[in-house]
Length: 154
Image (cartoon, rainbow, N blue to C red; front, side, top):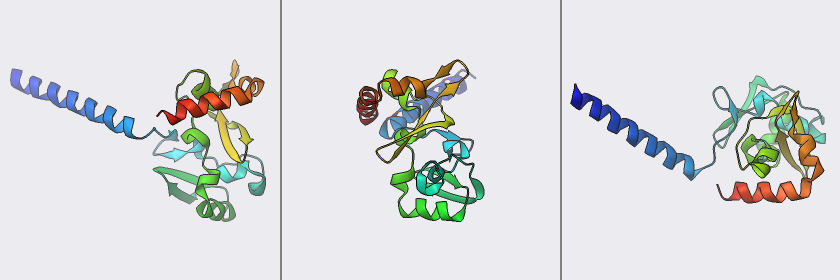
């Protein structure tokens, strides 16, 4: 019994070491459930050419990109994403831009709290007591630089 416990402990330590090594190789994606990105919202819908208002995506209009499944509100937005996924995929793999800049942490977002900056989608955490998008907008340029620095070291 003692040997079984030691073997299980050693396996757990190896698994933890492997997990942290794998996590260090590539930043994690902020996903919902089984790797659904942007809280199941259509990333193209945020942009003027996709309607300019976040819309929920449909399971039938899905596309996998860099390990995450993106959903789209219509076939047209799916086609736009397929043509140029890097344009429409959210910055920082969908993590809160403000938290990345100010705290150097990966924090969940409210998919309806966003900014399009220089043609890129940035998402933010929001609840009744904390609106990180509003905080971001007070010093967007400075926070953008910090977020880029923090993201690039991942």
